[in-house]
Every structure is written in structure tokens, then in C-alpha cells.
Length: 124
Length: 114
Image 1 (cartoon, chains in turn red, purple):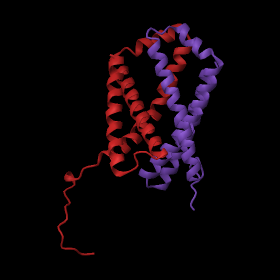
Image 2 (cartoon, rainbow over the protein chains, first blue to last red):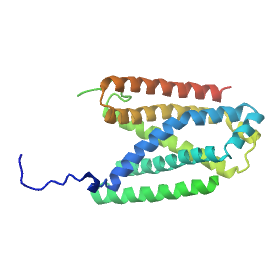
Image 3 (cartoon, rainbow over the protein chains, first blue to last red):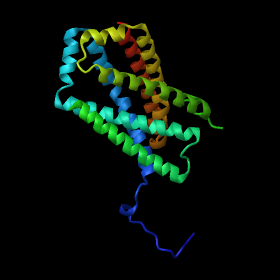
Image 4 (cartoon, chains in turn orange, cyan):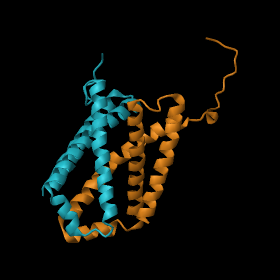
């Protein structure tokens, strides 16, 4: 259909709504957690194998870079957890309207943000 | 109705239920582990191994690991289906995903029972 109406093709002006950002972050955090599983299993096996290995693991996790990696995993877990609970709240039939979805997305960002800060306080 | 042979649930409703039930197991286990670390700030090797010597934690961990395999299969299958348009590459990624998850489960069994 040809239309004389002006078309805005300035992609920098388009904004993802918060609900879409939360949805994508739920996926991203899930992929991060999947990729972090070998690390988790590795540290679990090392820490259970002997006292020396246990101390080596605890020592490694006090170093700056492993701490940052650990924080990223905890942050991903926080977000994925909160967003997942939001999903199930919506499954039960709450917050399904457009407005409800927007509020739910905001609450998800705020709650998981608080958990991420708490995770940082815990690690440092 | 089109059924994808690489999806875990075979149909939408069973996939949906598997995703939710496994999510609850994973969520509760994550809460338990974080709670354990928070209540044991100076965790010793003895306390750590005594936890994983219990039969119930071995069984719970294995159930959670199997849940993770199912949950990640459904989640990553959805992500791969949405973003990888080349069916050849998608098939390779899906097989790699399944092999990877199988390896996680077997590795977990070895860690828990050795």
C-alpha cells in the first residue's frame, strides 16, 4: 500500500519497551547460567575432593577476577529467578494486562537490582 | 500441527509444564544453597563434605541436575529456534546443546558419588 504519510526510519529514535528488555534479559541470563554450569560443577568437584583442593577453591574465589565472574553469575541468577517468578505469577493469572505487565517488568528490574547489589555487598 | 523432533516436550502444553516444574526445583535448590552459604560464613571442608555426604542432598542435587537439563533444553531450544535461521546450523547447535547437557548430568553424578 502506498501512503503519503511520512515514515520515521530513524532507528535511533525507536526504544524497546521495558517489558521487551526484561524478556530479553531473562533469555540472556538463562544462557549465562547455562554457560556457567561447567564452572559450578568444576568448583563443586574440586571443593569436595580434598582439604587442599577445598582451600585452593576458597582462595581462588577471593581473587578479584574470579569474584567478578562469580558476581556476574549471581546477578544472572538473581534476574532469572525474579523474572521466572514473575512469569509464574502471570501464569496464575495476575498482572497479565498491558499495565500489569509494565508494572511487573518494573518490579522485576527493581527487585533483581537490589539482589545484585546485595550479592556485591556479600562478595566484597 | 507441526511437531519439532528436537523439542523436549513434543507438544506445547507438556513443554510448558516441564519448564515450570523444573523451574520450581531449580529455584528452591538455588535458595537452599545460597541460604547454606549465608548461614555458614566461614565454611570448613568438614561441614561442606558432611553436607554432600547426606543421601538426601545427593538425590536432591541429582533431581535438580536433571531438572536443569530439561529446563535448559527447553529454554535454549527456544532461543536457538528464534535467532538461528539456518536450519543446518540450528540442528548442529541443538545436538551440541543436548550432548552438553548430558555431559553436565553425567559429570554431576560422578562428582556426587565419588
